[in-house]
Image (cartoon, rainbow, N blue to C red; front, side, top):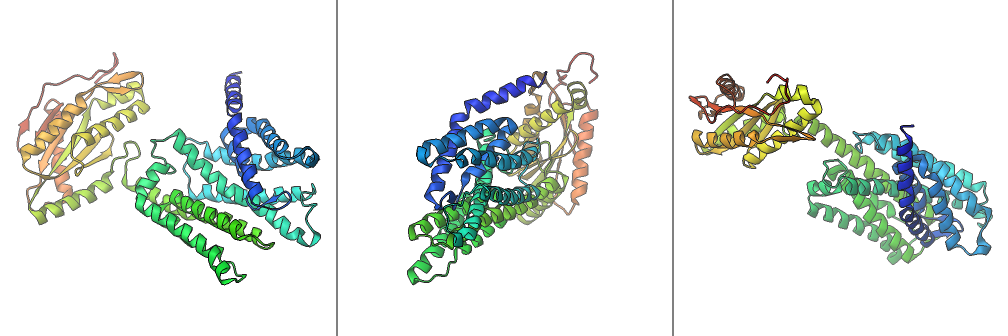
Amino acid sequence: MKGLPSERSRTTQVLLRFPIIFSAYWVAWQTASLFEVYPHVSAFYASAGLTVCFTMAHGLIALPALYAAITLVQILDLPILELTPLNFFGPIREIAVYGSIGIYLRQHWNCPNYRFSLPFAVRVICSAFLASLFSTLLATQMLALERTPVDLLGTGFLSFWGGDFAGVMITVPAFIILHRLLRHPLSRNAWNIIDAVRAAKPLSVVLYAVFGLSVALFSVALPAVLKVDTRIGILILFPVVLAGLSRGAIVGFLVAAVACAGLLVAGSHFGFNTNEPAEVQLILALAAALALLAGAAHDDKEHAWTLATFDAVTGLPNRYMLMDRLDHALATARRTNTTVAVMYIDLDHFKAVNDTLGHHAGDQLLKQAGERIRRAVRRSDTVARLGGDEFVVVLASVDSAEGAEHVALNVLSALEEPFSLGARTAAISASIGVTVHPGNDLPTEDLLRQADLAMYQAKTGGRNRIHRTAQMHAISPLIQPTIPAGTSS
């Protein structure tokens, strides 16, 4: 009985979104009619991809609404005299085949730790290939190609399959990008288009898109100008793969979409002959597939590098990245005759908060603490989490030891403010050790160890204070944290 409200809520969502679903299918139907090469056969059939997308989003409960939308679109678009049993049985074939693929992809796409990885890209491509082939085999049994001349049945079969394959390969990734963008516009998800374009640098994205469009137009226009029957549309795969490998899946897919649109529009302007549709469809599908594969391989490599160099909870650099940044800061200081300071921060009473409010609340506190520390220092400084409740800050090019202590005081004050952890709040303090690089070739590990010892002195000296390697500096009286009663601090 507990699942009934959820099912009822999902049904309500589907009903409320039916106008959107219907509109999407209507646009897909009109687009298919623009590129129709045989009766019932389009060079690009996005409706198949939409069925996969809507089933991924809503599950099996959406299938009746999808059938109603597809059937209604066909009834409204076709004259009554042209309506045949195909118009009513065709949607059943479509939602049965592509709905099954949507259900299969939904279990991966809906998981909490979803990421568009290389294995998921392979699942999408293989599913689209097999589903479109099976759907075409079923369609030929329903006389979908009955108006096609006998000598062109083979070409019609390939075009029917290619239209579905291209429709799924282009529509599904586009849906995933838009869904993640609208649902999580500020998340750090790998498929966040804002973050991806920003990380790839907007100018390079524009240049890749222009390059892809130029190649598409060139591949269509050159044979027409030279009046030769040779088609070189496959050239668009070059900028697509290049963009995916160098800038990731989102940028690669954007370039593929732009290049494919240019190829379709220019191709329809110059006209298709009976041999072109299958070729164009496969180029469209291959462009999307290669963009996903190359881009996912790039993103997997970036993700592996992020896991190796950044803390999973706070997003701050980990020990490995910290040591690299500290080595770089010390080398720069020796070259420019400047000073480097290291702050070692340990959160006071964190264990009590973690034990009473739970590890999830503890992770929230660590993340907020990392953000506060980062705001309290300069952008040029490095804030890292070593593990547990320990943070380290590398202050590059500080004026003096007193200047480093002033920054430490700002950090101490920032951490004294209460932390909002859902419905609860907790206040903690911090013990901070500060050491300044003496200007010689002191090893990096020794410098970090000195800061750690200074932090330990601050901890044993009463907590909620700063200790420099030279002498003790009590900053403020001990402030007890707000922790639920009955908990040791």
